[in-house]
Image (spheres, rainbow, N blue to C red):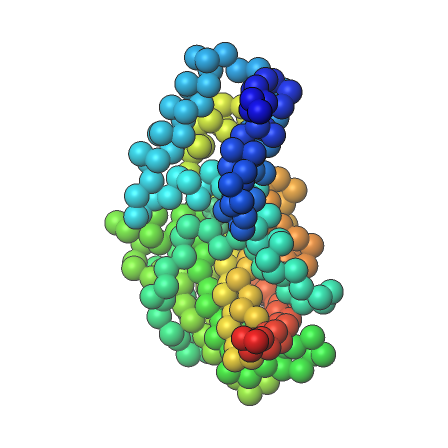
Length: 287
Ligand code: BEZ
Ligand code: FE
């Protein structure tokens, strides 16, 4: 029997049959079929000319050329199109009351220094002082002692230390703390500024050209780990930031908004927050 001929209305089905017709099954063929459906629908609806489609391919080529081990333009594309946030969303659904995860972002360094409680992570002292304190509890409100609280943040101008290796001390505004017997931690820092995601690459230029907001509201990053609990990888957002409703990477959730309070004249700011961890699911034994 002759194969169904390819036309505008059945194109995605014909390709799906090609991809899976020999019995291929599993995550990769399923993902490819869904991807083909989405792209074919977009092409049908927006009707690019061959020249416009070549420009789209050229854009993807540029994204590849702009990516290396220091800069990941593909990750930025995924972040700015909300795909990273969606992957987080479907993989870390947590019970009500638990602290949600959000996008980790590209400025994390795995080698931040371990510091004693109360230490300052601001190595250049530039910015308005901020005292961060918090507690780690389980869903019943019981403290989690011995948890590691890893934090990193932008400076008062909205830049991470690894974006400005010539202007900021190495490891500025990064540190790892351990909660005390009451599940509490505290450290000193400066109040971070919001920032724009890199706009000088193909992704930022493309989205900037259509007026898409590239700003990130001010935030502190945290990764919290404790034996027997799901790791929390999240942000605390500055509740006073005017850009909270248009975060470029769709990371803001009401549970992650912190309240910065004045510590008193000349003394800077206070931020206090409770992170709520969920017990890790028991690993299932292979049958
Ligand atoms: C960040 O929060 O550091 C970040 C996340 C995604 C894209 C750019 C920056
Ligand atoms: Fe950030």
